[in-house]
Image (cartoon, rainbow, N blue to C red; front, side, top):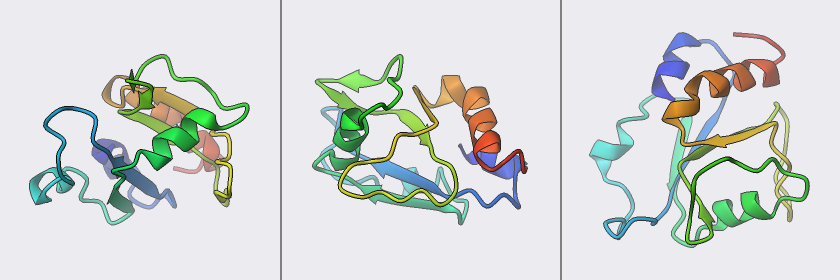
Length: 121
């Protein structure tokens, strides 16, 4: 994600990086070393210990289904793309892109972001 943002320094994209406990080593929120992996100012990171975002994505009516990234019924290590202006309410909106793991789908993710922004870099 950091590399995608570097290639589009003036893009109006906003990135929400949701960290959640999935692996046995995920006892606490990520430390500063991990958080520095996404240093772009357009990235907002938070700890979701109750998996609320993952469950909302999974339960979104009509949402795309990723080809990966589920552990014990919880979605993780994936990316979702929404067009500008989309707001979350009681039910999460359907994304225009939902897949992962993040690194292997980086090219598709970058294309989806560009399309969501109307082709603007």
